[in-house]
Length: 307
Ligand code: UDP
Ligand code: MG
Image (cartoon, rainbow, N blue to C red; front, side, top):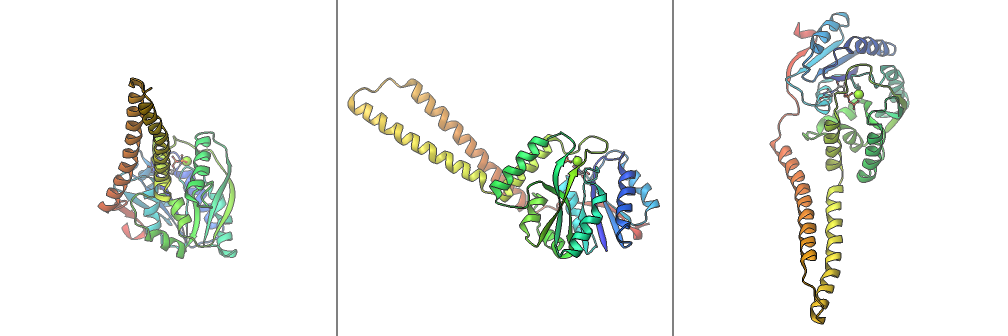
């Protein structure tokens, strides 16, 4: 069986086309499939549209979450509930074209990969393009992970890889990083990322920045390294300055030091505040993980048995 999981959050305008195109693409390579829509606490008519479209396509299932948990959590719900021995993840705004699924499926089945992800060659939309590219290059550098550059969530995995993914229970999640972390044999299909077909982007700049910070904090020591470097740099500067001060004092040309005192206080004070912020981020993350709350909560699962 093949499972396609699609998180949707206020995508009422797209549901129909999304369902039609996905089903058509999948039916071109297998009759045995399920499409799992995860309704991530939409406040518009997304759920109603999904229920409607299920009447037409009986292989569509809906996981209705109890509120908005974010799209990484929604994907996680899909991964945990998918039954297929191949499972694909796809955004619900048609930026990831469903028409690529047959090629991905062929590649994972015939070329012996465990994971095949879509590698973005470019994208049509301009939005955040620069920031996304810079982020990916930066993340690749600091995390040392080779396969994460230019690949997002769009991917297909076999059962072994999915089982590995769902074993990771951390509540702060960056799935492309986790997908790279688990290893296995990974392949690519290249594609041009479309513009979203309609509606507003649901990942606001704020949400994207949180996701980026999660990625960096969970997969690299970069913040700690920066602190260490700054600390070392500060130590050297102050060692030299200290020697100078002592010399000045003993040779008798010490000045009445207002500027130097104030500057040192400012400098040290701000560095300490930054360090505290970084430590705080780590403490927050440890706290979040130790709470061990569920990553998502399901309000209702619509499949053949629930009617
Ligand atoms: N999404 C979601 N929950 C959220 C935000 C987004 O399920 O809190 C879904 C959204 O409906 C879409 C996918 O995640 O199907 C990607 O969102 P978006 O297109 O806004 O992200 P971007 O393409 O800008 O990364
Ligand atoms: Mg999008």
